[in-house]
Every structure is written in structure tokens, then in C-alpha cells.
Image 1 (cartoon, rainbow, N blue to C red):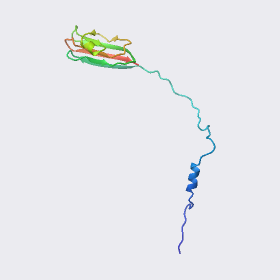
Image 2 (image 1 turned 45 degrees about the vertical axis):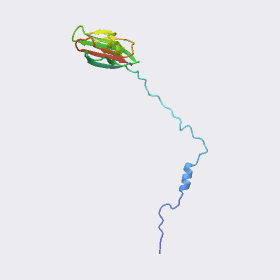
Image 3 (image 1 turned 135 degrees about the vertical axis):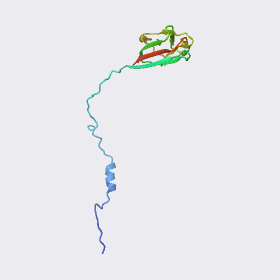
Image 4 (image 1 turned 90 degrees about the horizontal axis):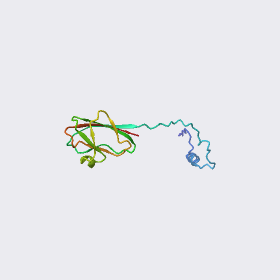
Length: 144
């Protein structure tokens, strides 16, 4: 004698359930569920300035060196020169050829940083081609 044991739901209604899930609804969606109100809690932060600084010891045998790149947001530049010999100076200008051929402005030792080139946003090059001894240069560039 054979007995059949049936357990669980023996009806295969997968097709009907899937059709119900995928069937298009003829009514448009309720927009009340899509709309939301919120309170804007964001704050406006004033952008701060930043400082780009550097330090370099320049030797007379060196080729011209660019110390500051072009920066369209630059506000000011401060440069300080420290020399071992009072007559030593650096050539400072906006191009390599200008400082290499001694067509640039000269900057002698300064006891404190000097603000230079206010409003100038191009590169800064320097060389110590005419110096007798090494020259130390410090710079600070304030930019937006």
C-alpha cells in the first residue's frame, strides 16, 4: 500500500503572482509621495586665503630657478634675502632669460620679509649669478 504525503502549498501560482507584480497600473502615481519639504541647513563658508612658502639656498654656479609659479589668485608675495657678503644680491624677475642675463632687478640682503609685486600673478625667477657666496632666499605667497 502506497501513501502520498503532501506538505505545504501544492498549487503552482508563480505565473499569476508574477503577472500581478509586473502588470501596469492604469492610474498615474500619487505625487504626494514624491514631494517632500525640507529646511535648508547649509551655511555659506567664506573661502580663506592660503599661504605657499619656500626656502632655498642659491649658489652662484646654479642656473636660474623658478621659485613661484604663475597663480591667477595671488594676492601678494613676500621675499627675504640673507647673504653672507653685504655686496651679494640675487637677480629677480619674471623669466629665466631675464635673470640669467642680468636684466632683472637686484635684491640685496633684507632684515625682514619685503612685500613685492602686489597684483602680479606671473612666475618669479631668481639667480645668484653675480654673487660671491651662497644666498638664502625665503618667500611667502598669499593666494585665494
